[in-house]
Image (cartoon, rainbow, N blue to C red; front, side, top):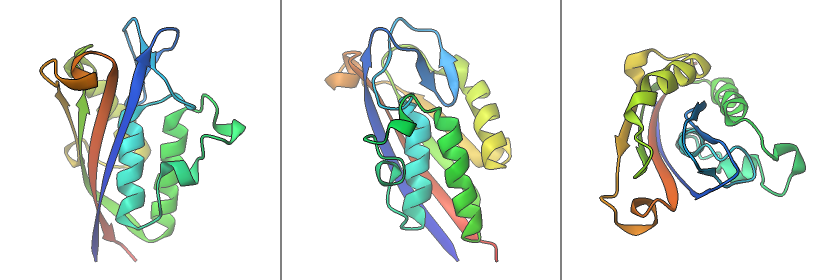
Length: 159
């Protein structure tokens, strides 16, 4: 049996925070505002994995009103979700994702993101796609006020 899920996240850019996307620190004068580290890519991937098995969403599993998730490292949250997926008897077939940001340019960082995420998710490089897009200076993302991400995950029942 196969299951597919979609995820989406957006966070506002702000000064005084590190920019963490795909589990890595990106050089930029602003970071993303959020209760955790606000890693939009990982949050979208988490929601796609949870959605594939109808296990709600990241906010339900890791509520932003819970102090233990304040400034949480999203790679740790992703690891917990992946272990949950495995405990339900599923494996990842592939994940397709997009980071939508006007600035900074994401392409130079994607190989390292893939390295970090493939290790956590126990997938090969060709099972994880991360693409970089802009908004052509339109809307909040295009005006460099926010960064967003989307992800789709295909899971397969393994036992």
